[in-house]
Image (spheres, rainbow, N blue to C red):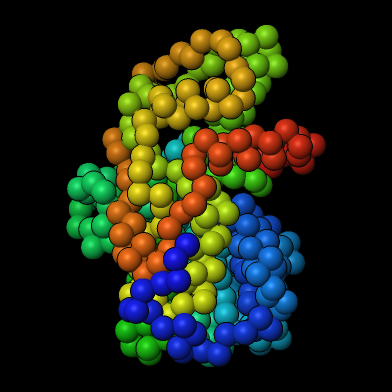
Amino acid sequence: MSSGGEAISKQQQMNLSKHTKIYIAGHNGMVGSAIWRKLEAKGYTNLVGMSSKALDLRKQIDVQRFFESEQPEVVIDAAARVGGILANNDYPYQFLMENMQIQNNLIDGAFQAGIEKFIFLGSSCIYPKLAPQPLVEECLLTAALEPTNEWYALAKISGVKACEAIRKQFGLDYVSLMPTNLYGSHDNFDLQTSHVLPAMIRKFHDAKQNGHAAVQLWGTGTPMREFLYVDDMAAAVVFALENNLPEHLYNVGTGSDITIKELAQTIQKVVGHEGPIEWDASKPDGTPRKLMDVSKLSALGWEATISLEEGIQKTYAWFLNNQAQIKEVKL
Ligand SMILES: NC(=O)c1ccc[n+]([C@@H]2O[C@H](COP(=O)([O-])OP(=O)(O)OC[C@H]3O[C@@H](n4cnc5c(N)ncnc54)[C@H](OP(=O)(O)O)[C@@H]3O)[C@@H](O)[C@H]2O)c1
């Protein structure tokens, strides 16, 4: 990572120090826990996290009370109801409403509490299904969304707009980061609710255990996707924390993509599965291509550093070492 361009000025709006009280919403999740680890490693000593059992972010009054009693100075919002195509398709109301509740309570709660810095995490699915590739931030709201996850996308778009409005109207540093597909340690490996990469790791691992049985995968394998290792994402959040970024919305990714077929072959190699791969073309492929244009953030000095194969190796090693506590998110 380079030191950053001249367009950004370090800690201009608020006096950030290693003792600044930083609340990471969703700190037990894949992304939140990576952000927590990164901040701790960088010497931040005043981190706050609440599990969903201790603080249900869907409950506005509880969130307001939390802000009053804890008085954090910065909020990083990595809390959300997340899931893959199946989960989005089957539970549209939860994906729309719970995500709006969580982010509204956090964004407005932080604003009402006078918090000057807020980092909102969205997703690349906020962009139109058929937007020109690579996806630039400006294509937001220019055409129809991908129908399988439009519920989740709509919620995230409203979060981006809420942060933009606060920034525009009140001049506060509320910024949105839109990650591409993320993967890594603490991912969800449940075959019904997980994203494509951890689901494939699980399938290849199980098939290897099962005498290198055939692995069945959804779709044709031709769609193209981009994947970012979660520690790189955490580094981008820390970059947004430590710098006063000039715009309200930034894509975060590697800037390069591969076909789902190539992804399967890479995972097969890392896992050591030697059986056949069977593609079920009757199942949906989703968006044909989803590559982020990451030039805005890279012009300011942030870039991903972990290659896909290295990230998959780290993720599979974590999976093997944590089999007893592997996360399986049931809806
Ligand atoms: N994973 C990806 O590929 C990806 C890609 C792009 C963007 N993102 C974004 O990154 C963020 C985090 O995703 P993730 O993959 O880390 O998800 P995750 O592992 O499922 O973590 C989500 C966290 O949200 C918390 N949460 C959910 N509902 C809550 C509630 N009602 N009250 C309080 N906390 C609640 C959970 O807390 P508990 O564990 O305590 O229940 C959990 O720790 C999301 O905004 C997501 O949109 C993720």
